[in-house]
Image 1: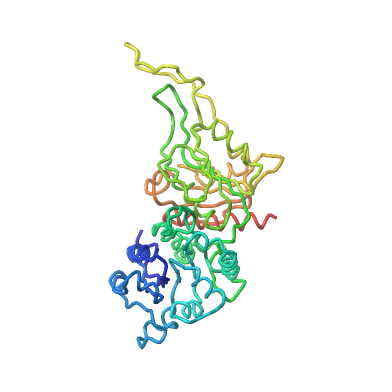
Image 2: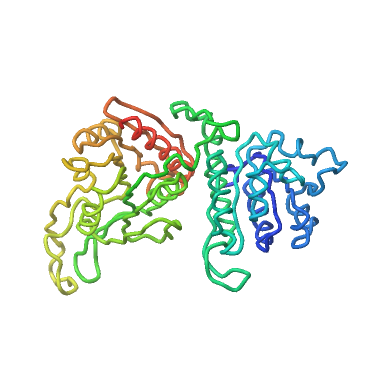
Length: 430
C-alpha cells in the first residue's frame, strides 16, 4: 500500500472549520502511504488544532503567515514541485476566496500559485453549504478544474443531521490516491491513452472528475450462489473487489453508478446505488431491467456457469453403501452476452474474462461471441492476482486486438485505468 503515494509531495491545507481535527488523521494516513506532506493552515484553523500537532505528524514546519521569513514555506516554495494540493476541510469562506482569486493568507496565495492538481473537501453548516453563493462557488471551481469531494451527511456541530460533514479521512485518502493514480502508473503502462490537455491554465494533467459526468453506468460484481439444497451451494472465490473498485472509480469520475452485486463482504461506495442479488437468474433479472437505461454496462461479476436443475427441499443426506453423488447441472444464462446482443437501447458493453489457459485467444473469442465492445482479461491461474486478491494484472481487447496492458498493481489503481479507457472508448463511439 505504501507505494501508492511513495515520494509524492502533497500540500495539505487546513482551514478554520470544526472538522480541522480530522485533518490530523488524514495527514497521518498520507504519511503512512509514503507521501511527503506539507501542511498550511489559516489563522482560524490554529485555534482549533495546534501547529505543533501537524509538525509532529508531517515532519515539516507548518505554514500560516504569508510574510513568514521561512523560505521553505513561502507560498511559492510551498507548492513548488507538489503533486497535489488538497484543502480539507475547506470552509465556505475559503471556497469564496479561491473563486474570487483573493490571496490574503498563505493558503489562498499558495492556491493561486499552484500548478499541480488541486482538490477541496468542503465542510460546513448545512445552510451555509446549501446557500446559492457556496454552490455557485463550488461549480465555478469545478469548471476551472478543481477536484471537489462532496461532503458527507450526518450529525453536524450545530446539532442538526444533514450534509456538510467532512468525509472520513480514509475516504479522503482514497480520493487522493484516485487523483494521483494517473501519475503512479503512466510510466509503466505505455499503452494507456495519453492524458488530456487541460482546457484551462488552472490544473490539470490528470483526468477531471467531470470526465464521466452525465453517464449512467451499471456494474456487476462478486460471485453468484447456486443452491443445491437448504445448506449447500455452488459458487466461486470471487471477492467482488474488482467490481467494487470499478464502481468507486466511475463514481469519482462523476458517473451515476448502479452496482448489481452477488454476496460479498464489502461495503458499497457512498453514492453508488446497490442492488443485491444471489443467483445468476437474480442477477440476469436485475441487469435486464436496468440495462436499457444505461450508457455503459461492465460485467465484472464471476457468474456461475451452471446451476442445479432442481433444488432439494431438504438437506441431501449421505446414503449407506453409496460413494458417489450425481448432480444434474444446467447452463446459466450469459448475462453480459444478453446485454451485448440487445437490439434496442444497447449500452456500451464491457466484459471480463477470467482464464487459466490460452488466455488471449479465449478472451478475444468471448469478445466476438458475446458481441462486446471491450473485454478485460485476467489470468486467474496466477495466485497472486485475480480472485480474492488485492492486486490484479489485466489486458484489454477490442474487436481490432489488444488495446492496453496494465501490469500487476492494486485493483483500485487498475480500476482507475480501466475507467479512463472505457469512458474514452465509449465517447469515441458517439
